[in-house]
Length: 113
Length: 113
Image 1 (cartoon, rainbow over the protein chains, first blue to last red):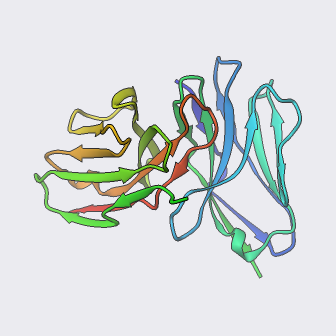
Image 2 (tube, one colour):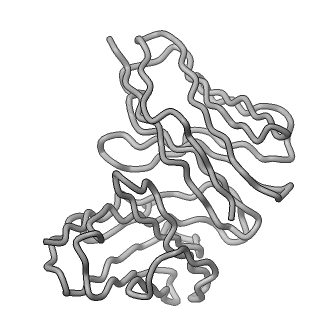
């Protein structure tokens, strides 16, 4: 089974600064999707960004971008110009060809004013 | 467009009882997945239903079961509740045959006493 590893249980960043959250995964598949979800204290999981494995270009959504290294099975999330509203749990997720989605343990991001 | 709706939001049950949680997916979404979220274990996949059939199942005991109705609404049932079943149960829906993102409900917080 695929596994997703987030090695940083907690991270903090100063407002307006940049932070990178790490994620690695293990798979033998060549076609899959990767996601970063955000879970604020309200607990609603919200999609931040997604990446198709067959696309080499890194996905970008406004202040959020990823560094996708397929060979290294690495999928990090970079948040630029951090805002107080970015404080949340961030989950990296892998979705396989058979629709099975697995999540990492999460990284709690704190944004300091 | 209405999002994923989970009911109830909060539930308190006694050990040994059973509980049923409900999830109404986004209109048009026929795939519904369930996850258990706990501080110690993170997000764990329970099962996925598509067209009233269970397609994938996580590593949970048989006390955890689910079903999906013809209108794609899904229920999960936990019998003989244990203290360790206390968790946030999240439901997610997604489009048919798509490996795009899953949309999550706000979850049901189950407390077993």
